Amino acid sequence: MMLFRDGARTTLMGVAIGFPLAMLLGQFLSVAIFEVSSFNPIALTVAPIVLASVTAVATYIPARRGMRVSPLEALRTE
Image (tube, rainbow, N blue to C red; front, side):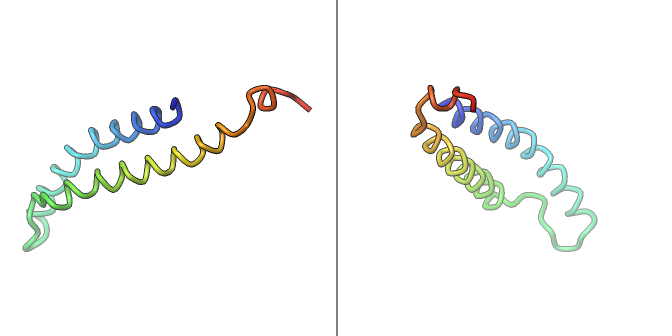
């Protein structure tokens, strides 16, 4: 659960920082490039959802694998 929570926290921080930057970059591109809109609601909605889904899978698989190992075996040094 800790691994999943850390992955979710990192993802939320990235979305919180990236969303305003995407809005600013969109405004810059709409001025610099002809026929580019500054606000695309589909892209701004789908991108965080895909990012959160990938993060959930990427943190769940190692966490599940780690739960299979006994804590005593993990702490044992050879």
